[in-house]
Image (cartoon, each protein chain N blue to C red):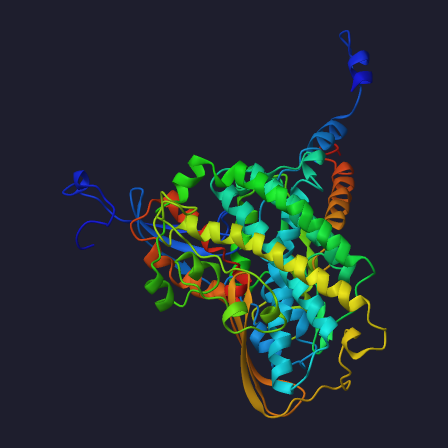
Length: 163
Length: 400
């Protein structure tokens, strides 16, 4: 920060393209929807709490989907819950991303074989950007998943080229 | 609606009002999971909150019929993920009683040790989350800090942070490393002053007390009639703890108290409240953490004593020798044990094969959700949140 302050001491100009500027601001303020159904939700809570502290990466939990950029689907999604997840996703404003956290949200997890009520993967309902394996994934794994998503956001282009 | 809503002041009577049904959840930060409450309100006053459950029904009881006894152990973790060790313990006790398996002393010591550590860690989530529901975020961060230390201990024991699958039928999965007792005692030494700090931070806070005292009162008789168990029952002044009343494992050899609610007692911890209010249920959990610390110290001493035995001694083993394909004789069994959220009972019917014919899980959260409609009648909407938090429900335990 000191370097930057020194650099911008006088009026100055920064050259960059629009995509980089937009992507930088998007990837550094991923406000996530506090959406947890099962076991992974506790790891999500602990990731947000003191030791792992995802606030460091500009990630702040939001309770309402209307203020969220990122939906972390943490935990088992049942058929009864799936339509609600879709509705929450639709309520989120663009641009929006989804991380599927844990085996249950990825593919049904340990309930894949015999359960009659568990959805085999949330990607049947909403588009997923990053899948994190684990039952439940460790907070480090979740943070790694977030960084994979940030890499993905960094490559995005929002402006259409002419022609 | 006939007559005024209970709790409404007389000034409102005679004014034309209309009831509104408010859907709270399944996505709501303070329902502790995916519970949906159909709250019938008249202004701010709630006429009743009817729970709508089943958003996390994962058919765990049905899965039990398709897999053998050992394979079901990881699923018990997911029945109550906040206290997976206790859930493992309840299931292991049931199968062992049905199959007539005796557990070695060292395994019993380790079981009680991890169960009490897990009781502390799950109460930390409950206490912190309740404070967060009341609008205080800092106590939640403190509580999670303490919980992380328990997670570190469990990581050393079994490699997992949340779903442990550590207890097996006939013992525990693996022995602990040397010096584990010291680490547990260090944690106990650390936690005692930290709990005093936590109490100074939030328990004695007058705003917090005002939010919880005399809110959501459940009398002792109601609690028994509704089938409440665990801290929710003891909060209503009923001294019932399976660890004390029907001791299992090592609990008959351990010294500990069973804290009960003492609302309204001028010398007690809740002088401003009523017996069985939300603050009583909260205080029971605070006191239980202290009792668990007491048990951990005693069990650590037993573990050290056990370490002195030669390695081949039968009391030093962690696992009973069992056949690779465990077959259980015909019969049925119901075993209950004291989990942090109350009695958890496993009812298993065996037809003599490798797989159980039926497994029924009885959990404390289910009955707690059951009484919401009665308890929340006449409260304000903000108090409904306090009541949900004070009952400490976990949704996979409700839906299973």
